[in-house]
Image (cartoon, rainbow, N blue to C red; front, side):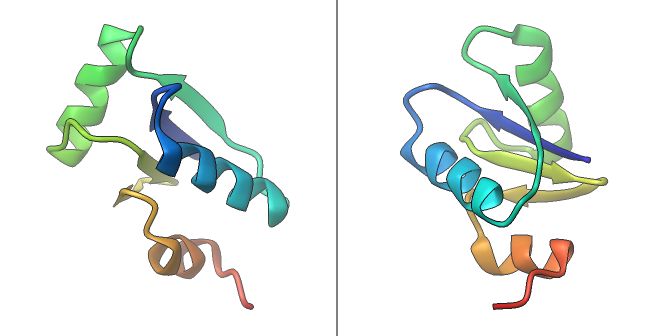
Length: 77
């Protein structure tokens, strides 16, 4: 399961979501600008306040780190 912690104004979040869609991956998105519980969870798992934070089956990626996302999801170019 892929969970993306994001905000509506985050350019990198949009890029990440477009990338995952283009590769055929579904994800759950949470808007941490309106959900305090999810924001607290994001900070707890990542130690970060910035978005995006991606949780891929327990693998936490901070920012739109395409190489790390590709590695975890085994995406080959």
